[in-house]
Image (cartoon, rainbow, N blue to C red; front, side, top):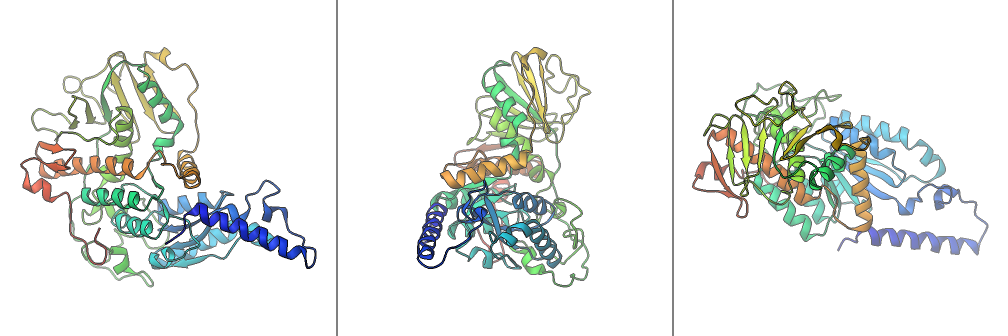
Length: 451
C-alpha cells in the first residue's frame, strides 16, 4: 500500500532527526539553515514532491509557477515530445540552481512514458496538463498509485469517463483539483458572495458567452517529427496520422490545437466555455446537479443554447443579448458583449457581471461597496490544492465539481451535434427516449487506456 503524503512527510522528518542525532556522536556538522527550514525556507523534508505530466502551452505555464513555490519540489516530468522535455528540464535546472548549490534539491528526471513517473514512490502528487484525451486514464492510474492530482479542464472526453474519475478518486481518497481557477479567483469569489447573499434578489438566470464544437476531420499525413512518440500522443484515441495542426512540435503555438478534431476534443465548448459554465453553476447553487433540458439555438424558439433546470433556472449561452430575443435586465447595455471568461447573473433586483482580471460590474451601481480584489487566479488554485494535500480536505474545484461542469459542457456539445431538444435525467445521467444522444455519452478507447 502506498503511504499518504502526510505519513511520508512524517517519515522524512523522523529520518532527518535520526541522522542529526547520529551525527552528533561523531563530528560536528555545519548544516545550512535552509536545509532545516530555519531561515524561513521550507525544509526539503516538508516539501510536497510533484511530477508534471504534459508540458505544452498550458503545462509550461503550470510548470514554471510550481518552480517558484518554496514548499514544492518538482522531481520529474513526462512528455512525448523531446523538445518539450528538454526545454522544461532546462527551465527547472535554472530555477533550482540555488537549491542545488545549498544541497536542498534532489535529482530530476524527464520521461517519455508517464507510467515511469507514476511508479516512483517519492512523488506525492502530479500535475496533468495533457490533452483531455489523456486526462481520464492518467488520473485514474495516478489515483491508484496513491498520487494527489491537479488536472486541467475538461476533466474528460466523455460523460462516462468523468463519472469514473470521481468514483476512482473517492475510492483511493485522493486530493483532486481541477484547473477551473475561477473557483479561486478573487473577483469571482466576491461575485458569488454577493449573489448568494441576495444582493440582486432571486437569481434564476445566468448568461455566458456562446461557443462552438468540433467535428471529425481527417487531415493528410505528414512525417512524424524525430523523437516524437506519436502512438503515445494518440493514446486512447482512434488512430490518425500525424499532422502539425494537431501537435505543434517545438515551442507550442496554441493552447489546445487538437480540439479542432472531435476525435481528440469537443472544441471550445469543453476547452474554454467550461470555465463559465462552472462559474454559472456555482453562482446558481447548482453544484452536483444538472439540467433537465438542453435546447440548441433555433429549436422550440430558443435564441441560444439553453440549459434548463427542474426549478426553472436557466443558463443561456449568448455573447450578445438581442432585444426581443433575450431577456435583457434593466441597466444592461445590449451592445456590451459577455466576454469569453465572463458571467452575467440576472436577479429580480439587479445584475452582476464578472470577468477575469478583477472586473466586476453590477446594477444598481451602489451594490459594489468595496474594491474588487486582484490576484493570479492560477496561483490561487495551486495554493488551494497544495493546502488540501496537507490537510486532506477537498479543494474548491474538487473532482466532483470538475466532473459536474465538464458533463454540463458535454451536454451542450451533444445538443449541438444532434440539433435536438434533449431531455436529461441528471440523477441517472441519461437522455430520455433518445438512443443516439445516449450513445454519445461514451466512446471506445484504444487499449490499454479504457476508463
